[in-house]
Length: 422
Image (cartoon, rainbow, N blue to C red; front, side):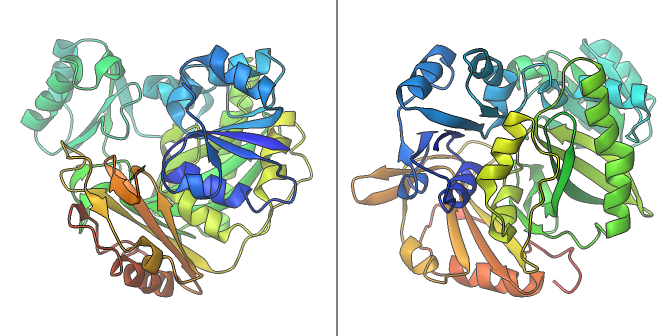
């Protein structure tokens, strides 16, 4: 079976690496890909915003399954256009992708179906938002309603910070994503990521993970798209996973089906755990990045049949096997990220860093410049290792990073610090 993978980040490199191992795979294409993905897939210059062009490519190259990695094409309705052309696709429809595309939509759904989440209000103008924020207990969370690449969230510790965040949102700092906003209570506890495949009816939970959103050690600095992750998340006990399924994920899948917009794809619940009870922070409608890097190293089963079963609505009865080992990913980003950063600096030592068979160097923002690999984005590499424990995987990943020669990059040195013994 020929597969087209949409995207060019670290998540897509991890998915491509895993898909390449499938005996069912014919040719693997990726649009646009990156300097790492081109080692396992045929990267194609395809404008994924031109849905008609994507359909034509799929027809011409006998694509049996399209796997959509990032959220933006999903929120733009790419899955709808592919399915309308009788192509099989892994990823939700535009209507179902609103679970990530609009934070307000998800909060309203949670309120309607009794899904535990933070108290909130939605706003479409700055003055009303400021008046509400002024009367709330601090800290308070200010979120752009739409897609903002992980940067549209501010945890305001003062009312002045809240007002600044509100002004930034409505002044266009996040483009159309900030046309509306959600203000919600700050949840205390420990964050965790929970993933599940669903074909709109059956729900298959995947392994757990924990992300590190802040840019700097000790969970300081601005929010990013993710500076590292590990799997499994020790806080996610079997009992807690069952509660997440029963109280959060299953009701959401049922709600979307009852609304006539069934969700098909991978549902990623960002959670806050306090006193053993889970609350939903927000949903993503695709694999997490960098969580996917850790998950793919732990997945023992063939990924392709699982994604195909979701696309075909045949997930019932399918099971997945996982390595007992832990996996940990450390993101190396360009200095300045998540703010302004320079592109084009050369990265050396990647071959030496990846010499360990239990280490994979997943590329995100890279491109090839002749014989050189250069940085071409904010988050650039995901150095991912697998070992018996999180502590051992952590040591293996950081040992690999020592082999990388890139003066233009930075990384957190404490990924995995919240895990027991790490």
